[in-house]
Length: 217
Image (cartoon, rainbow, N blue to C red; front, top):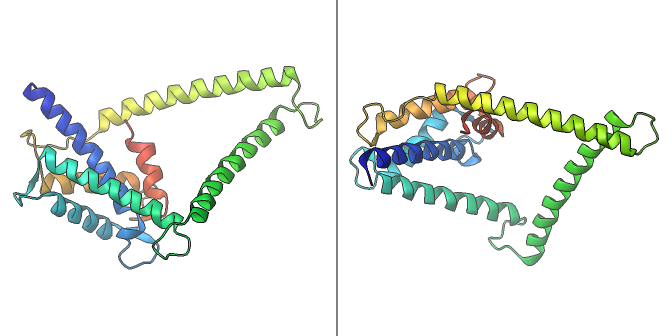
């Protein structure tokens, strides 16, 4: 593999890795004092801990193999969180009943969201107020939704261009590796981007929403 391609892949992998680290840092596990929020200090500590674990040869920088190991650790954490969510009684065992309950809960949420969308459409396009959409009203709704989706797609594309132009360089010295200092700088920038209301802390959901809204390529 040409060096330039390998380096580009390494950069992409590290950026995804840091995004994963940011998500982990915004979870309750990083809420060290259990107050329901993740401070900048807690976020930084979680990121530094991840770096230390991943830096298996203790040379102060991450190789591609070490970053892959960290991504695997994140997958394990996600699986653990899913398990804890399903283990309703906290006994360390997920029974068939608990699995079914979790599945039904997901289905109910999807159903509620679908009903909410249908209710909004009905309220907007039911011109004669008869509680249903006629074929003409359905066509109007479809045309309106298509226009809305087209505008959203255009805005997403524009935001992606802006994010790419504004994306900071992770491997600052261009040596193909990520040092602890470079990692810390990127972690700080990630926190700033995730902190949507700029109050210096991440509340539940804020980090995830901001990450997807601001950093997704």
